[in-house]
Length: 66
Image (cartoon, rainbow, N blue to C red):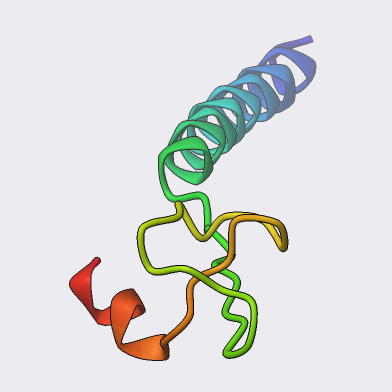
């Protein structure tokens, strides 16, 4: 019976550690989301937001401001 308790205890510790790391991963990936910016040399406008094809920027140097 002691062996079963020890194996269960070790399993629970590993499960808790895994859950903590998984939670940290989920939280960090939420804050580090990538953003796609759109550039259109002929129809773009640098006063736009640049986050969709309809609101694209005209020049690529605008990306360097972020």
